[in-house]
Length: 285
Ligand SMILES: C[S@@+](CC[C@H](N)C(=O)[O-])C[C@H]1O[C@@H](n2cnc3c(N)ncnc32)[C@H](O)[C@@H]1O
Image (cartoon, rainbow, N blue to C red; front, side, top):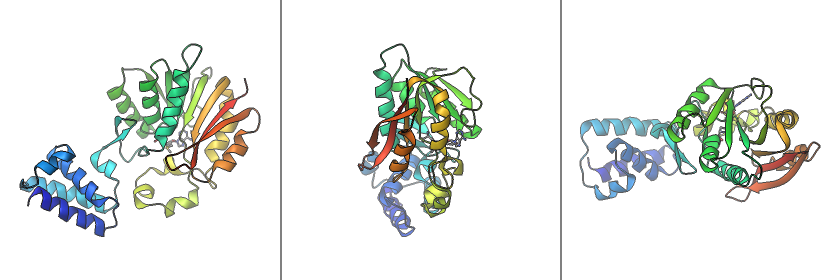
C-alpha cells in the first residue's frame, strides 16, 4: 500500500469512528511511523510501506479510533513553541493556557525590583513553569503538584528544556508541604475546574484519558479557587499577583470571590474565542 492510500484509508476509518480532524490525525500518525516531517508525506505519496510500517500504523490508528488523544499517541505536544512530553499522568496542555503563560512572563519581565519568585500551582506537565522560566530568565521558579507521576513528567520536560535546577519542584497537596518561609511574588495556576458531575459528559479524549485529578474541581468546580482565595494570601508577598485560568461561565463567581479583601481583581482576560477565561488578581500590599 502506498502513502496516499494509507492516508485515505486511515482518515476514512477515523472519520467513521467520530474522530475530529481525521485526515490530519492520519497524516501526523503516518509521519511519526515513517519518521518524516508531515509535509514530506506529500512528496512521497507513491512510496510503498513495508509490512512492519503498516503494522505500526494500524496499531496507532486503532488507538486513535478508541479516542485516545493524538498527543498521547505521538507522546508530545507543543506549548508556547516548546515541545513537551505528555502521557496519561498529566493533563494535555491546552492552547488557551498559552494566554496565561504569556501574561505571566510579561508580568515577570516587567518586574521592577529584583528577581520575581513565581509558583506554578498544579504544574502537571510543567508547561506553565517551563514557558515562564524560558521567557523570563530572571524569574525564580517553583512548581508544585500533588501527583508524583505528573511531577516525574514535569521534571523530564524541565531537564530537556532548561539548564538544570531552574525550577524547584515540590510534591505537595496545595501549599501544605512547601517550606514554611517560602513566599511568592507571582502565583500562576490552571487548577482543576470541572464540576464533578460534568466530567462524564465530556468527550472521551478528556474524560477517559486526562487524569481525574487534573479535572475535578469539586461539586461546583470552584473548590480550588476557594482554596487559593483563602490560602494564597499567606504565601504571596504583599502586592503579589495571582494569574489563574478558569472554566467557561465561571467568571462571575471568580470575580465575586477575588473582589473581596484582601484581594482585588485587576482584569479578566479572554481566550482566543473571546470568552473570559483568565483571572488576574492582586493581594493587598
Ligand atoms: C488542570 S491540571 C493543569 C496542569 C498544567 N498546569 C496545565 O496547565 O496543563 C491541574 C493540576 O493540578 C494538580 N492537582 C490536583 N489537585 C491538587 C492538589 N490538591 N494540590 C496540588 N496539585 C493538585 C493535578 O495533578 C494537575 O496536574
